[in-house]
Amino acid sequence: MAKLNRQNNSQIVCYRDSSGLEIDAIVQKYNGEWIAFEIKLGTGNIEEAAANLNKFASIINYNKTKQPKSLNIITGTGISYTRTDGINVISLASLGK
Image (cartoon, rainbow, N blue to C red; front, side, top):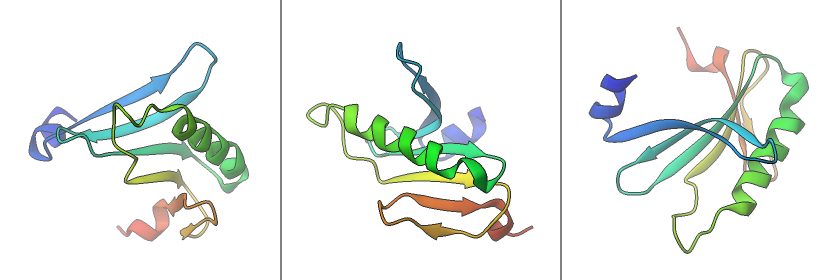
């Protein structure tokens, strides 16, 4: 992962706060742009993952950081689509081989 970080001028971190809110991966470029990912094996937890991402986005102080470029849920099955709240649901199957 370190090589990927250097090549893309970015860092990958996870987030967990004292309330138990957890985000699986946040990819942040050194210019401050960032995207967040929740990773779920199936489609049954998409609503929970979306709630986590929306809660996380709501507590960020945007006076100190940029708005996210995107919020995303990666699933092992199902189809890829963008939800009405703007969160992308990305199926691993749609990424190809």
